[in-house]
Length: 346
Ligand code: ADP
Ligand code: MG
Image 1: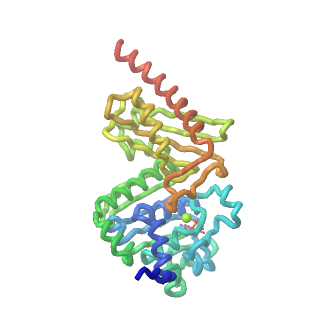
Image 2: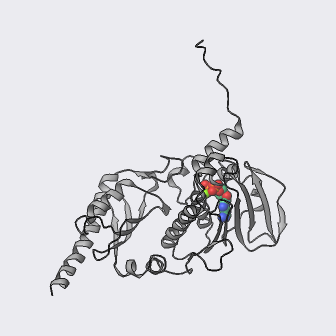
């Protein structure tokens, strides 16, 4: 009666689909990976089109290096990457993606098409992939230097996920958020985000802009006017920070927080907590700041492998580093609030 169930090996297709669903949770995740790939490929222009919150169609076009034609048959296989050769490389890798999983994962939960042209090739090549594999041989076609990645019918084969993501407005707003944040962090790259069929873009930045100017364009003058810039180079813990944070004149109902560590958009609940705590000294109750923080930390001190989405980051000497960031920001804020008090009293 209590006989154990027979242990069976899951079908490989099912295994891959489950793994892919962990890496790619929603259109905005997929897009983040694709933007990072375009930036890795040194693109200076990135154009994104989304249909039905990216679920029906998500397309990203860049003017980067392109993909060599010979690589097109393996580019979507798991653990294929041009960015890392040995385990040791993992420690020093400076590019964003690092383990060759993004395209493979996407191809397990969507139809993925790549159109790409390198400088050496006379024409572009186009190929579609399902479950990591080429559907047909790459076909020559017309095209500009760079890469277009098209994702269609995301999660067509994962009914539960597809159902859970039925709010296309919410998905598009998450997409907008990712593009907006990358555009702030990469002001020398021009970004355009459009809803399929729309003429006016949701996001547009010029190449060769500045972070400050992109904040003004994307978050508006009320944030831009009150920005404080803080820079910090720390020899002891070997990290650098560039921050733009609002002074105490600015308040918002919720905190807007952009965190980049080594050029990847990530989250850190400890840094978030530190900011909330710091600003309680400067802002009225239940009001919050706007903060952008970019950290450069020695790659060997970071553990980005905590979760398959690589979203929450852990790093060595975390508490000490966060303490130093806090005092640098506090110094700037206190200087500013002192002058404000003076101004109010005068
Ligand atoms: P990773 O970024 O970790 O290498 P991905 O699955 O994201 O893994 O990409 C696999 C490979 O495909 C990359 O290493 C790169 O060589 C190539 N690639 C992907 N997207 C682009 C792009 N937009 N431009 C040029 N090459 C790309
Ligand atoms: Mg990648």
